[in-house]
Length: 146
Image (cartoon, rainbow, N blue to C red; front, side):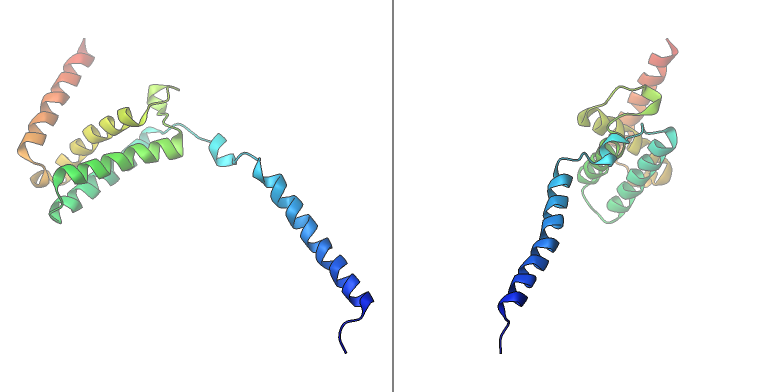
């Protein structure tokens, strides 16, 4: 028996009526900006503390798992920088509206993560890294006193 002409025509009209709105919807959403890109809020002190502690925790765990210290620190620092860039657009509230680049965030993350890791797992931090951190910390304290 097969489908008669009127049923085939009705089926085509039905399919077109379903496909057209879907196609139009897809085209209209292509050029719309993503709202998440525009609603970036500067990282607060609380946010920075959280990211620093997460990096220090990762570093301590990686050190105990016998991962090369520099690799573990590099991963923790890169994650710190990437989160601040991705979630906050590279802006830290305490520093104003200046957008920091990935290199500056990476370096700041490295310094802060080592400082926190010295409190959490001092035995996991190599002596030369600890000495470099303490030297740099003293320089920063002296610079801020002036």
